[in-house]
Length: 128
Image (tube, rainbow, N blue to C red; front, side):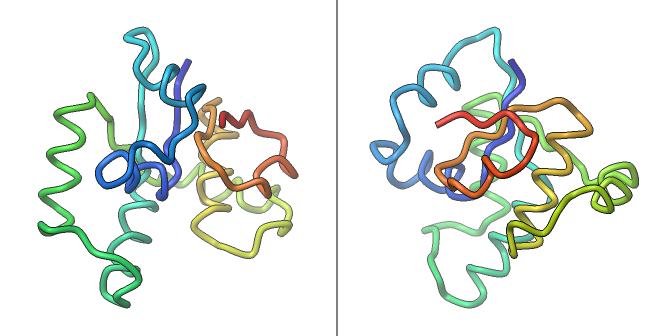
Protein backbone atom coordinates (compact mmCIF):
# COMPACT_ATOMS: atom_id res chain seq x y z
CA UNK A 1 0.00 0.00 0.00
CA UNK A 2 1.20 3.53 -0.76
CA UNK A 3 0.51 5.89 2.13
CA UNK A 4 0.39 9.68 1.90
CA UNK A 5 0.95 11.25 5.32
CA UNK A 6 -1.16 14.23 6.28
CA UNK A 7 0.85 17.06 7.85
CA UNK A 8 -0.30 16.38 11.40
CA UNK A 9 0.67 12.72 11.11
CA UNK A 10 4.17 13.72 10.04
CA UNK A 11 4.44 16.11 13.01
CA UNK A 12 3.12 13.49 15.42
CA UNK A 13 5.64 10.94 14.14
CA UNK A 14 8.34 13.28 15.41
CA UNK A 15 6.74 14.77 18.52
CA UNK A 16 3.79 12.69 19.71
CA UNK A 17 3.68 9.24 18.09
CA UNK A 18 1.18 8.05 20.72
CA UNK A 19 -1.45 10.26 19.03
CA UNK A 20 -1.34 8.18 15.83
CA UNK A 21 -3.87 5.35 15.70
CA UNK A 22 -2.64 1.79 16.17
CA UNK A 23 -4.00 0.80 12.74
CA UNK A 24 -2.11 3.64 11.06
CA UNK A 25 1.12 2.87 12.92
CA UNK A 26 0.92 -0.81 11.99
CA UNK A 27 0.48 0.01 8.29
CA UNK A 28 3.19 2.67 8.38
CA UNK A 29 5.64 0.15 9.85
CA UNK A 30 4.94 -2.58 7.29
CA UNK A 31 8.04 -2.87 5.08
CA UNK A 32 5.90 -3.57 2.00
CA UNK A 33 4.12 -0.20 2.34
CA UNK A 34 5.65 2.99 0.94
CA UNK A 35 5.36 6.28 2.82
CA UNK A 36 5.03 9.63 1.06
CA UNK A 37 5.10 13.22 2.27
CA UNK A 38 3.83 15.86 -0.13
CA UNK A 39 5.75 19.02 -0.92
CA UNK A 40 2.43 20.72 -0.17
CA UNK A 41 2.59 19.44 3.42
CA UNK A 42 6.12 20.73 3.85
CA UNK A 43 4.97 24.11 2.54
CA UNK A 44 2.01 24.09 4.96
CA UNK A 45 4.28 23.16 7.88
CA UNK A 46 6.71 25.98 7.09
CA UNK A 47 3.84 28.48 7.07
CA UNK A 48 2.52 27.18 10.41
CA UNK A 49 6.00 27.36 11.94
CA UNK A 50 6.36 30.96 10.76
CA UNK A 51 2.93 31.76 12.27
CA UNK A 52 4.12 30.12 15.51
CA UNK A 53 1.29 27.56 15.52
CA UNK A 54 3.89 24.97 16.56
CA UNK A 55 7.62 24.42 16.37
CA UNK A 56 10.32 21.84 16.10
CA UNK A 57 13.57 22.01 18.02
CA UNK A 58 15.39 22.05 14.67
CA UNK A 59 14.81 23.75 11.34
CA UNK A 60 12.11 22.12 9.23
CA UNK A 61 14.59 21.08 6.55
CA UNK A 62 16.54 19.01 9.11
CA UNK A 63 13.36 17.45 10.51
CA UNK A 64 12.16 16.46 7.04
CA UNK A 65 15.57 15.04 6.09
CA UNK A 66 15.86 13.10 9.36
CA UNK A 67 12.34 11.67 9.19
CA UNK A 68 12.70 10.74 5.53
CA UNK A 69 15.90 8.85 6.27
CA UNK A 70 14.75 7.24 9.52
CA UNK A 71 11.31 6.19 8.25
CA UNK A 72 12.03 5.71 4.55
CA UNK A 73 9.61 8.50 3.56
CA UNK A 74 9.61 9.66 -0.05
CA UNK A 75 8.87 13.27 -0.96
CA UNK A 76 5.95 13.57 -3.38
CA UNK A 77 6.32 16.64 -5.60
CA UNK A 78 3.25 18.58 -6.66
CA UNK A 79 2.89 17.92 -10.38
CA UNK A 80 0.81 19.62 -13.04
CA UNK A 81 -1.51 16.60 -13.10
CA UNK A 82 -2.17 17.09 -9.38
CA UNK A 83 -2.91 20.78 -9.96
CA UNK A 84 -5.18 20.18 -12.95
CA UNK A 85 -7.04 17.44 -11.08
CA UNK A 86 -8.11 20.04 -8.51
CA UNK A 87 -10.81 20.98 -11.05
CA UNK A 88 -12.47 17.66 -10.12
CA UNK A 89 -12.02 18.02 -6.35
CA UNK A 90 -15.15 19.39 -4.67
CA UNK A 91 -14.67 22.08 -2.05
CA UNK A 92 -16.04 20.06 0.90
CA UNK A 93 -12.78 20.85 2.63
CA UNK A 94 -11.80 24.53 2.86
CA UNK A 95 -8.08 23.90 3.41
CA UNK A 96 -6.26 24.20 0.05
CA UNK A 97 -3.34 22.08 1.30
CA UNK A 98 -5.70 19.24 2.20
CA UNK A 99 -7.44 19.50 -1.16
CA UNK A 100 -4.02 19.16 -2.80
CA UNK A 101 -3.35 15.99 -0.78
CA UNK A 102 -6.74 14.68 -1.90
CA UNK A 103 -5.90 15.46 -5.51
CA UNK A 104 -2.51 13.77 -5.21
CA UNK A 105 -4.11 10.71 -3.64
CA UNK A 106 -6.62 10.53 -6.49
CA UNK A 107 -4.02 10.87 -9.25
CA UNK A 108 -1.41 8.59 -7.66
CA UNK A 109 -3.84 6.06 -6.09
CA UNK A 110 -2.56 6.71 -2.56
CA UNK A 111 -4.17 6.07 0.81
CA UNK A 112 -4.15 9.18 2.99
CA UNK A 113 -3.14 8.70 6.62
CA UNK A 114 -5.14 11.31 8.50
CA UNK A 115 -7.32 11.85 11.52
CA UNK A 116 -9.30 14.50 9.58
CA UNK A 117 -12.80 13.08 9.09
CA UNK A 118 -13.53 15.52 6.23
CA UNK A 119 -11.31 13.46 3.92
CA UNK A 120 -14.01 10.77 3.89
CA UNK A 121 -16.23 13.18 1.90
CA UNK A 122 -13.97 12.48 -1.09
CA UNK A 123 -13.40 9.48 -3.30
CA UNK A 124 -10.05 8.63 -1.71
CA UNK A 125 -8.86 5.86 0.56
CA UNK A 126 -8.30 7.01 4.12
CA UNK A 127 -6.48 5.21 6.91
CA UNK A 128 -6.88 6.03 10.58
